[in-house]
Amino acid sequence: MANVQTKLRSIFDLTNEYLEGFCQQLQESEFRQLDYFKLPMPNADLESKPLTNIEVNHISGELALGQIKRAYLDFLRDKDQSGRLAKRHPGIACLPKRYFEVFEPYLSKINALKTEFKNLVLTLDNNDARFDAVHSAVPGLMTLSFYRQIHYQANDPYSIRFTWMTKHSTKSLTRKLALTMLERSSAYSNPRMIDQSHWQQLVEQEKRKVASLSENEKLRIRRPIRVTPEVNVRFADNRRYHVSGALPFLVFDDNPELKIGTLTNYQPKSDPRKQEHEYLVERLYLAKGE
Image 1 (spheres, rainbow, N blue to C red):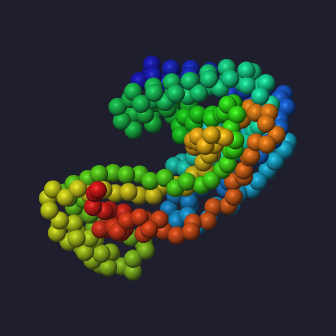
Image 2: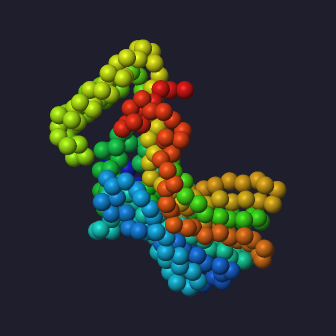
Image 3: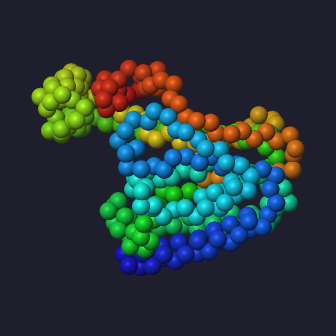
């Protein structure tokens, strides 16, 4: 374990050196456009409260450059930040194409080191061992933030736009496992229910639904998780792809007609699960498998 911690610290320090050099190069460069979309700090309250909206503060020009540089170096937890939710830093820096040969060595090395760090963490057997190793090597590190790749484009895109994407976590399970899960939840207290007896009545109803299925019934939980900003890149021949917008996106391009969008406030339109699924157990997003 000590050897892994030493390696993690070494990779972290080297990554930091390259990132600082990269940010210094940003400071010395010319830009065609700079935009940073500041999001609210993810505090502990957001871990349990349902998401209603996300307000975006659009910053541009020289003020955006400072925010963008800080974003690439922001992977240590702030005192007011949630320990489970990482900050996101959507934005875009558009540079003249000649700068690509200057930045490409930094980008390749930084992304490779981030991948090396992540792969080394994943060699450890379980989450507890990984947590101990990472936080002994780098106290306060938000691993998700540190793992993030820096995305960029230098091959003449037609447009770069921003949007919000709702991700889902999907888990397949058997009827027996679903009943075990419900059995455990019957002992929980739920503050949204009037009292414990009503909560247990609800769980018993859910257990009866699942118990009525055949033993071989395939089930799955498809739970929506955090809404996240996304960068959508499109080319003139309609090829397109999308990447995470959790870090500022870099584009090296001289085309004055390049279309660059903005990230607007997020407001959920409706409950997507009711559009897509009829749930066997609504509370758990538990449905029959396909």
